[in-house]
Length: 280
Image: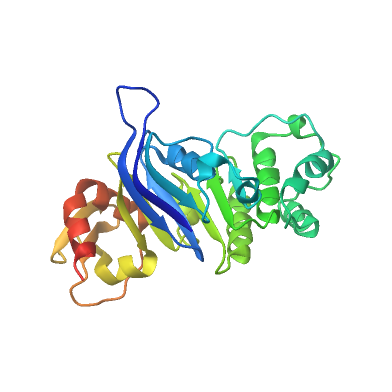
């Protein structure tokens, strides 16, 4: 569904933010995009949506070149930015204005999502609401567009704990084999039960792009007593519960993915991690 081939992008002539970047994303997955601040995650999302144009390389999204801004492509993409646009509209008027851009928009699903988020009236003025309430409206609307490509940048920022659970439920309920959902986040604990493919950016490149199933087949995540070590250890971190470890899964053991530990392991031991996944 999404293909990047040797893509370069920069905001100025001196420093490239992305260089020779390659990426392939398939439908039927909820992709989690992770990386430190300044790695280029939001830029990557905007390139996918056709909001930014590459200086070099080739990008295809659903068979379209996104920088050409084809209306057919745009009607099947919903992009939720981290910074919400200011709208001095009622929720009802917002729906009336923007829903026609999305041919598969489901008003009943929008109503259901709002109810789930405890947004009780479409007469509420969006510019009078808190950031968290606005975020709920945009998330509810985005899911109701039923686009093939749903892109969300830090969607759980501003949501309280119950709302984060409702968000996970909503997103999981609309995934099918023809849809691609991309979520960029720093709040990995909010989404660790939702994401089924993980993309990690490090040093402005794609350091890892693998399904959770593949990751847990190749790596073993465990918690050991401070005096015990699981070999061969790739990365370890001390905690009050013991030593959290990422190991090469040489014995084909079963373990639960820890996204935070995985992220740190990739950033600190990228070459070794990539060698493990590049070995067939």
